[in-house]
Amino acid sequence: MPISDPDKLISKADKLTKLSLTRWSADWRNATLLYEEAANLFRVAKKNEKAKEAFEKASKGQEMLSSYFLNEKIRPWDAAKHMESAAALAKELGYWNEVTDFYRRASELYMECGRPQPASDALAKGARALEDAMPEAAVQLYNDASAILEEDGKEQMAFDLYRAATSVYIKLEKYSDAASSLLQLGLAADKCNATNSQCKAYLGAIIIYLYAHDFKQAEKCYNDCSQVDAFLRSDQNRCASKLLSAYTEGDIEEIKRVVQSRTVSNLDHVVIKLARKLPTGDVSALKTDAGKEEEEPLDENDLT
Image (cartoon, rainbow, N blue to C red; front, side, top):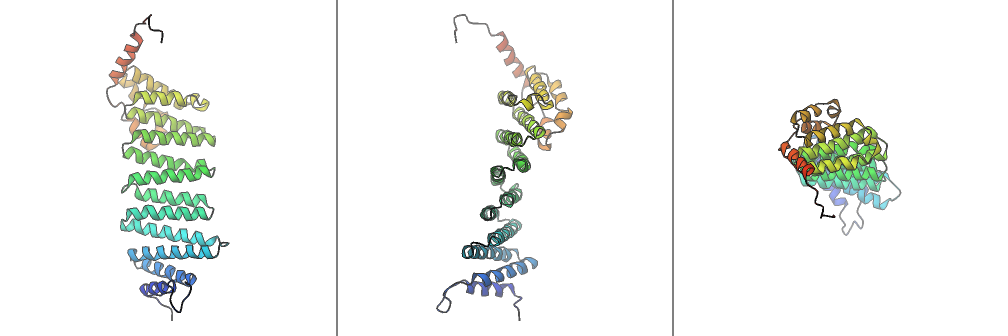
């Protein structure tokens, strides 16, 4: 008669993995089947703590089997799936460090299967789960997920991950990192000729620098990005040029007019929210500084 008590299934499985005078080798095949059955029963019963632990053991079992049967690629795949299930339950329980560890382990197992796409997806799932509780860890997972896709030559699939990382950086008020994330998106877009996404990313980075009241960095970003021909000839470039000119002239009304333009309205939502709050800080100081530079008398004795 089959056992329907998940606790007894776990106990039986544990015995199968331990060596004794009568058992000289662990029976991982049967133990893993029992762990999997117990995990599903615990999950249905909403016993999340025990379900999580059972899925961890089931994942370990599949890993052990994969080391015995190296030609069976299905084994590491099942180990990864079980680890993802354990991670999802850890999220329900609020065990945030385990969420990070389990999704990372699932990603590693998918990579062992030669499957970078699900490996990246596992990290992205972990990042989404951690955005509120551990935003710093979340953004690192997003970045690692993007790196896997780029190494696999699938840059376009990383766009949303860079956008998600940008959003988290903005929540953390790490504006320089947010701008850098969009610039990375721009580079990824350049590799796959996604010109529109590239130009929008560059304009977004400039707006973020302006929101952080870092005009010099915004201007440098504009000049650097304008070396890219696609951006130089784009609507986003013209919008950025008008915005920077308005800042230089201290024209608050022009700044507000530009950020209401259709070009800005077509950017990512988190960037639009920042743009609509421009200008931040004392714009008139920029006009004063610009005026001083223009009026600076030429020192004939200064040969530098």
